[in-house]
Image 1: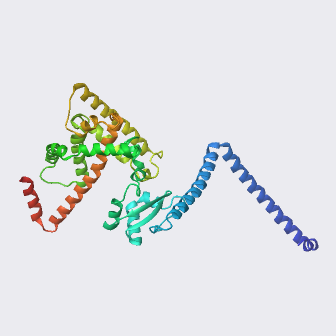
Image 2: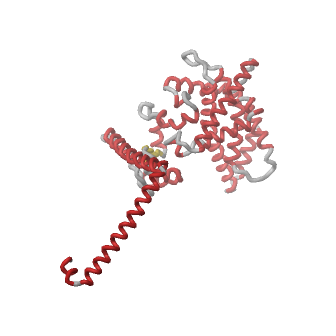
Length: 368
């Protein structure tokens, strides 16, 4: 109040002091803000990425919202699964952090809350979890026109290579799958059995009479050994096993949760994966050249792929052959090692519970 300030000098003095302090603080604040801005502006490498990241985040949010709205509108007449909203859910990322941290725990929470079928938003994609016999039967009986394998397995393209299986057009993919099936035909498998027995006997002979092992790790190692002998060829097993095993491990590690959403995201695991695949191509190229130069023919999957002809008369290149070998190894190694591990665990659990006859019967079965 100016009038009261004029009548009371003390008020005028207090007002003047308060105004001075206010101005001083404003100057200090302005100076600090200006210094921060100038400091950041001098380092354009900081300012430009921050601005670009913000713009990308906003654009991603708008695009994802539009994409989801279009999806819901497209299937508005149908019955969409419930959407997962447990735990930490963030804009754009959705439940991405939960998925990266522990996808199994997230799936268990969703199943407990929503049942056999539910959808989770993860990094802009709709992931629908399907569990239980009835729900999974519907998925496995669906046609490619309804459920696209190629879209779901797009993450595998950098792993297997361009032009291999899910990186190829449907016609060529069908031809390649026939090749893989041919390499695992009953006649081929009968040739593999003696090799598998030989590898298993040599592997278990190193165990001794008793001890403790990680059954999953042990069986994974055994399956890689048998696969290298039966599928990749004698040369790999006898001369290049350690090198190929290391390359396979890098390929396997290159399949991370983030790979399902951004298979070429710049992380060390993806860089190592790409280098390992290129090294694997060189390994098989040398083996193929040596076989052709010496006119040697082997009974293995590699020979099947080498001798193959596509419908257009072309032969698979070393890159295609390597991609098919990697695909075949991935398709069998994980499922076989997991199935074998569960079999062993259930078997030993029965013995632990007192059913010692089971182990005796299984041993007798192997002898005969």
